[in-house]
Length: 402
Ligand SMILES: Cc1cc2nc3c(=O)[nH]c(=O)nc-3n(C[C@H](O)[C@H](O)[C@H](O)COP(=O)(O)OP(=O)(O)OC[C@H]3O[C@@H](n4cnc5c(N)ncnc54)[C@H](O)[C@@H]3O)c2cc1C
Image (cartoon, rainbow, N blue to C red; front, side, top):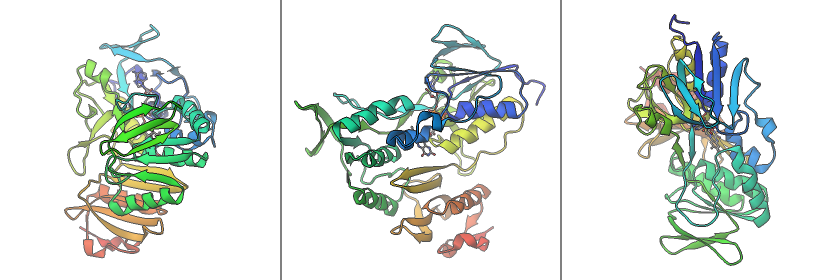
């Protein structure tokens, strides 16, 4: 630890980022005070279970806690930070928290659509019970948004026996992370499980019919009805405190490679942070679990003056109808995908994403080791011999040329 180690650290947000940072601070030997405030009533928990085990009811909140309470960390649940001065965090319960160093770990919230009528969104554990109960009450769910969370919620609702329809504005589901062939695999997977999925649907209005059913109508006049409507159209980072503090903010709170914001004793990490991409240049915002944990670890070390090391190549996963998809890197719509192992039709494969001949990402089902290996290759910055990509390529290290 450096000589300028802070004596008191405040963490705003008690999700994966806040919790991990507190844990790493203690693991690295920090003995000063740590206060973590979080708006949610629940103790830190595994948010990915919200659209999976918690929504299906196969796990309870007690079974998805992030871990044991951390030694000597003052956790204030159900408390919101409403302002930050140079030395204190102002809380809605009136009791400010003094700090020498501050971590903004405020994550993101569900994006809303300006539609009338009672619709649900899904971000935290407090959203689960009302949505679960309504799905069971009405027996039908319309999901607006065919991204990862919308598709997972659709699968969960189907497992509860509901009639489920998904409406996606783009031409394919999961289109932010999946190439066409994988999107098609997901269309088939949902169809096999009795879910109706429609693409190129821009919902423009929602009305409540006399029997309480909701009817969504698209720009082209098509309409769909259901008893319950979930809007799942992405997330918005909670940057407001950072903006009020005058920090540099882009698509998230901008940080350097050590997770420092534009104010030296203020750090940001996780969904709310916009971090440098040391491999491809530019910046990005991770919206996945691994990014939260990895960035929190680096932020905690930086706060203590310990060199934080390089950020991992990001990766995420999604579980739908028992299929576990993994994806990594920084993929884009124009990337070329090369199948490296297995078959997409068999729902067991690894595909690599190339941009200008450079390995930039991967996606796959059933071969998690491949994804790990590809992340290492991306991190190394090595170029890939395109002609060698193919079955079992990942078992052949000579496919990488320097
Ligand atoms: C439904 C769902 C399913 C997901 N599934 C997956 C998955 O399968 N795989 C995967 O890789 N990723 C998944 N993710 C993404 C992953 O969960 C997030 O990337 C991760 O939780 C981000 O952690 P975070 O701590 O940065 O932010 P968050 O988890 O958003 O936590 C931020 C916390 O800060 C609190 N907060 C915000 N503002 C304030 C304030 N002013 N004062 C006090 N507290 C505040 C919030 O209430 C929240 O509790 C999923 C996300 C969701 C919503």
